[in-house]
Length: 267
Image 1 (cartoon, rainbow, N blue to C red):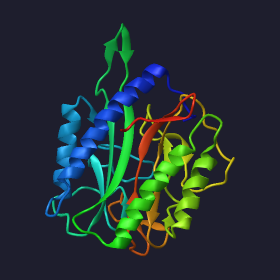
Image 2: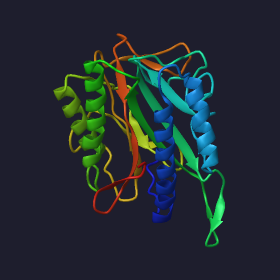
Image 3: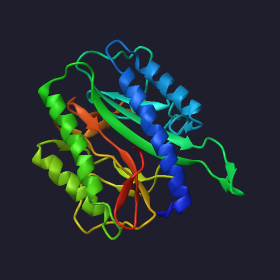
């Protein structure tokens, strides 16, 4: 799929859905405490998405090469699991866990008319990483630096900038903080589909790669570790884990490239 430009009306829809999604994720974060099963968080997220008039975008999603569709509404990735952790009733949050929560939504859940024009559901995507109870100082450092690297990447977004500018800024900051930078997974375009062009790696060369243009909607998502940057795919066919079992963290926002710079849509 080629890089797409969204209309102002479409960006309005994505903004509306993004605000709803951010509120839903806030509620899931508040429910993530010691003793809670990750499947309970998934059920909460799905209920809230449906109540908001949306539809989960992860549930039933299939990526190229996957043997099965994704079974959950959210991804809950714990400790050495960097992304795409599958919620389970027997996976219980424990004191000191580092937990990534990744969520996506189609909004509205069905096409409807506005001023005589059909509104097609559009997709937003976002993620945060949190600590459960008291966590180690190194775990907190990882979370804080990964979150800040997202802000640094977002600050590079404007018409005429490139995907390489974003990746270089993120990479430089994470390297300065002595963190591993996941290279096998990347941010992406979003809106008409959950994953669109362009890919947005968390490393790169300034001035290189796809040029950003007004109307593009993208998801930037830094993923970092306290150790080796390499990841392996777990036996479930979805969860990516660090090769050395070091802690991982992941943050993500959906945003629009505007005339003057960037607007984050998942806040």
